[in-house]
Image (cartoon, rainbow, N blue to C red):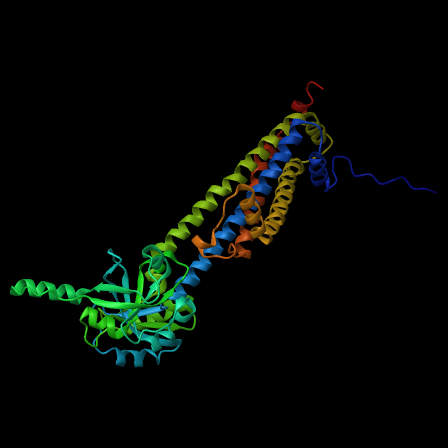
Amino acid sequence: MISAPSTPPTGTMPRSLPAFLAVRYLRPRRSFVSVITLLSLLGVTLGVLVLVVVLAVMAGFERELQEKIIGFNAHLVVSNGDVLHHPEREMARLLKEPGVEGAAPFVSGPILAEYADRITTPILRGIDPQAELGVIPLRRYLVAGRYDLQADTILVGEEWAKRNGATIGDKVVIYAPRHLQALRDSANSGNRSVPLPTELEISGIFRTGLFEYDSTFFLTSLRNAQYLYGLGRGVHGIALRVQDPMAADRLKARLNAAYAPPMEAITWMDQNRPLFTAIAVEKVTMAVILFFIILVAAFGLCSTLITITAQKRREIGLLKALGATDSQVLGIFIFHGLIVGLLGTAAGLLLAALTLRYLNLLRDLVGRTLGIDLFSADVYHFATIPVVIDPPQIAGIAASAILLCVCAAWIPAWNAARLLPAAALRYE
């Protein structure tokens, strides 16, 4: 004997009704609503794609910038704002600090440089050639000449050399505080003698990849710099290399707790804080601007669902008359927004992964098509466009896109749930 099929009790609806109808409403149909739904889906996809790619590239540039700054700068600098007259004793003490891998004295300050009848104002950094290698790997930055600072020689940046047409073996005339002081003293005493400037020979040319460093820094021996600044055996500070540059703040705090002012330790992050602050502000600004793409898509989704609720007014009233609860009707449109958010976000993440994977090929293709060199290596000093994938950041973008789509569906869903069956079926 065949039993009759079981039917749900009167006044109840299956639990899967919201998901079933949400998927049904998403099916492509030849209607204006379907076009708006598709555009909303594409908007979410495009927003997630652009946001992930742009932030990954900006994070890549920030990482490359950090590596270049760390590579050419000490991780931490100790100074008193004037002159350290006994740097050896302080260096010996600093080398005993946990985490310190190298220490080197330095002299640093602006000078006047004359070459080919042109005057420039670079920053002269006087270093101990051997001790400095334990702090900064200078040899790897040389692109011409040799790492030789034993005599009256100097290393210049590649950009400065290009601008002035300087090559290895050329002489640069230096006017430093010592010459200016001597000139002032001779004027005050009525002596007509003029102090002679110092000539330094270019022994090497370096390239760090940062325009500011390659165009404004000169390197010479500590002895030369001490003479040019009239410091005797004194120095301006001590440069340190630490095991973890990103944790230099901890050593800084420990040293500053032990030092009495004006003695102070500052990190490479402190020295370049305006630059990294500008990058952080730019990243936030770009993220906010690009997030509006997803927001526009969410408004499109909201308008789509408002249209659907108007078109399906009779069906909604019939469902409620047959026993559908407010929460089930609400769930239909919430599920609709959730599905659009999930599909758009998944498609955006997939396209972003493909774009980042073939980003440099796309750069070359666009460059050849438009006849321009995008991200020129001569300008940015990057052979490839740097990319950093940050999983928590990507997860945040995905979650925000999905949540925004669900929130966009809430208003039309709430209006549909409040619809009275009698009002919906009055003229049917």
